[in-house]
Length: 463
Image (cartoon, rainbow, N blue to C red; front, side, top):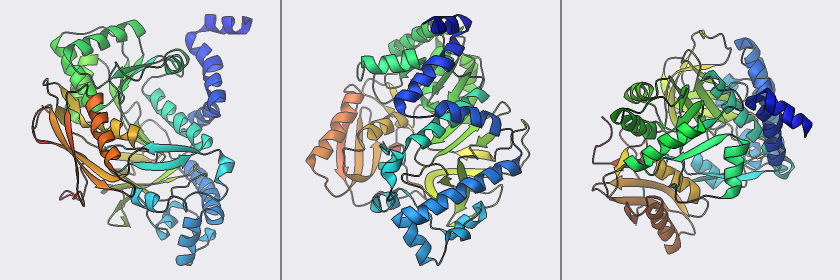
């Protein structure tokens, strides 16, 4: 007891680093703090040293996949390959690219024969790609992913244990409260969650008051939601919140959004791309250069199956170097980027992207005229993705307060799936979005070869 009191008197941040976060690690069975300490040092290695680290981890992953994962064992044999043929990033092209469809179609084959050794956790993601996905993660990978995020936040001025707030989530403020989650997030993690579902002036005024009371150092959120909040702040002359940095997540950040958010909050915006299923984190440093988590993931930029060089736009294909329960090697994330070969101004040896074109979503107009970003609807699909039997979805709005959800049915689909989708969207929008669910054979790609999951034909909220 004396030790805890002594640490608390030193500094709130020190107390959280030495007491609360270790407790969280033990409760989760993770080692995020240890991994964070390692990454805080390894970011300053020279590029060649980080590549050497990649090679070592790739060797372990490839050997493990060959010995224990039926899908990759077959892929190697069909191509006449052995683990010795895949030693570097340049060798990965010899293996097939996989995507969400591959994972769904070969779910059991992608699990390691000894996957229970890694204490696997079943995770789901709906995302804005319109393709719900289930996959197995493990505590070791979870530790690394959080450490990667923490490191990225430090580039925006965050110190582990600082208060933070997030404007996002899948539920309006009237739903989803539990005392346990409140204690874990607000008290143990020093994290304030503000719903991005209710965007009425009254709700935003409430957000302002909570931010004033909680005093977070950083605010994270969907760019589309942060943009609406920034417009509210400007219109109502809100200032003095004491926010030092804003971190944008989950969507592509546009220049007009960055400018508006920085103007309203009076601080810089740092863009953060995280793809849990792909194991990729790309974030802006102090100099606003996009750095990859190169120690833990290999990223290729691919177009039409060919690996592109620097300066060429293509799709992100990732190889998670630390997931062993269910390895994803050469996994297509669905996002676009351009690789950079420039020398970093900040001195970090991590690989870089010159631009990142992440998932995008439009704004939907609710029955009361309020705007809701498509990424919020994606969060709803993410929440129910393990319960519904669909291959793809697309939400289309043509009139205020109404939307049509196009779905491609999967095996096991029945009326209960249809009801769960419509009821969940209706409830999460507090009855302000009436939904019709319609089955289709296919959801076509755009002319650019992308599949848009959220289409609003009303053209509002983008000015």
